[in-house]
Length: 363
Image (cartoon, rainbow, N blue to C red; front, side):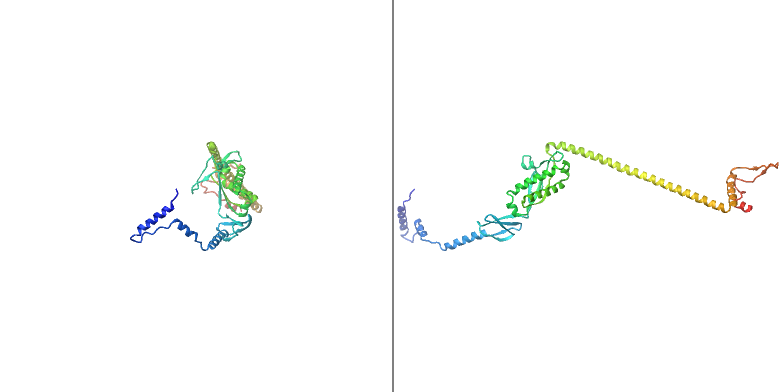
């Protein structure tokens, strides 16, 4: 649609005349052509000053930068490594000449194998359709298949090596972690894998760190944590039955060892007691024999010093033991015709004479 500018101007003038008959009238709004004419004659003051300000802002934003306390700035000059920038405010040449890449060297990063964490809790879930679950399926040393999820915690210890030595460090880390874990698990049985997770994690950490050092990837392995190890679901029931049988076997062995530990020490104690009794009896017999020998020797020595007295004493002592057991005694002399009582030896022993008295009488 084309505007009739002349007709529009005439109508505007007529409108102003009608309004100007009795009063000051309504002011006419500015027209488009008038505004264009004003702008044509207007010149912006300080154009060069504004340009300088914009250039200064551009160079200032590209030359000054800050590095966080957990980071290190890697500065490249024309794409080549130049230096490291420490935490704080730093300076570099403008963009196009020098470039800075900030690398976190203190905060540990995490790579998960066999599961995906969710939420803030420590729980995890697995899915057989994901590649992460496939990486956790491993063959143990006794040819059993185990599901072994684990976590690798690492940090970027050398930012220069991390950026320039390996093209894709995360891919290398995942591949070497999986290879290392399969190597360590392949040397152990399924029971060792389930019960010795800390030992396996420590061995895998040392081996993985050696591999990353060989590649000079600038990665430091902080920790490897193994989650709950199990067997695949299709063989879970059979595996549980095997474990139950192994537990029953071990329980039977423990009971047998318990009985063994009760019976064997008791038998050993009894045998030791018998040996000690025999040794004591032998010592007693030897001591008694030595005492009898010493007594006999003492008697012999006394006899050697006074043979007649000792002989008479021994005779009387023997008679003292024999005669009371004979009852009434009579001695018949071949020259006499009557009976002569030998002694009136009663059972009460009132008429018995001690050998000492007889000896004294014989003296």
